[in-house]
Length: 123
Image (cartoon, rainbow, N blue to C red; front, top):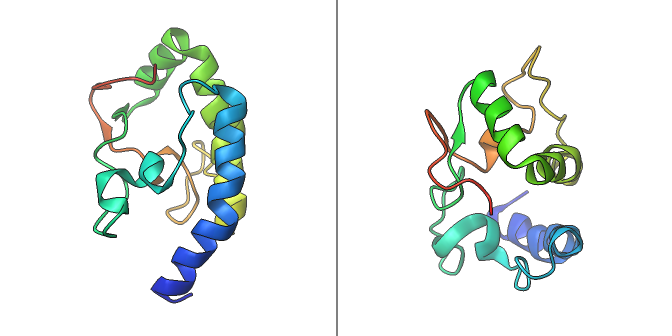
């Protein structure tokens, strides 16, 4: 797809589906879901980059993800069980298998920066 076609697809297909998904999870936290929800402040002028530096930083190792799963179990189940597979399907990609990761499979790293410690874990 061209850049314009990707933008149109995101606005007409991805945004409505993901908005409904996020709002069904937490209607108050996600009262407003728009391009900036995932793409950050650069969404408006299309200067964003992915992964998005404005999203919560996630751990880059299994132990960190396990700790985050204990701290925020509902968020981790939602992101891993609903958001990740839905986005992968919408983008025509496989869901990443952490036991056998493929570079073109869709996973947390497509949206979130991975680092040593979460800087602001999901609320």
